[in-house]
Amino acid sequence: MISLPLQLFVQVENLKTGVVTELQVSGLFFAIGHEPASKFLGGQLETDKDGYVLTKPGTTQTNVPGVFAAGDVQDKKYRQAITAAGSGKKTNSLLTKKNSFTPDK
Image (cartoon, rainbow, N blue to C red; front, side, top):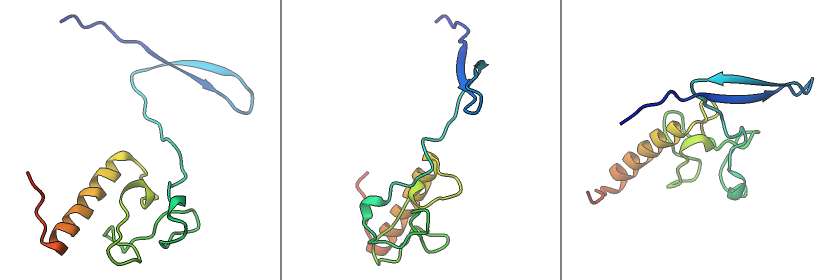
């Protein structure tokens, strides 16, 4: 296997001046957005003023019994995919314990 050096460039535009600058980078991480995708809930769950679903501190439990919120829809601080994976696992653990349910392996 032959490894070639990979050169990555990003164009960044200064929105005030319109000047575009090209930067060489070794990697890139960016957020998709800062608006939680909770509008589809139609007000059925309690949210804060920004639309993040409110949960019982330290859990994924919402104000509606049996309904859980996981990931960036309820994590105002980190808003990343890894948060969704972690809180999804937390929800699964809660449901498994609550319903004495063991998923197939």
